[in-house]
Length: 68
Image (cartoon, rainbow, N blue to C red):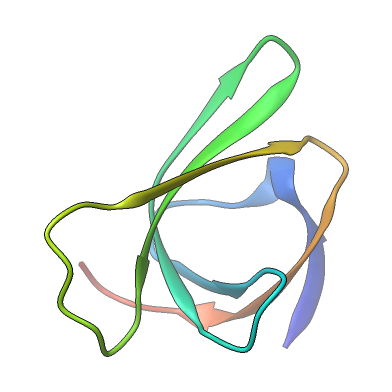
């Protein structure tokens, strides 16, 4: 497990934000100096990705990598 800045996230990363649920990063976009991340919970089948906006330097727990 690594703590990385949100701006270093890439599609396929498995992360944990403010809850114990692990999420797979679907897409990362830089918008106006902030990072918009689309996430899908690992192990749960949901139709739509969850979208969060984070400061570029916000620390995020990166648990590893996963395929799409």
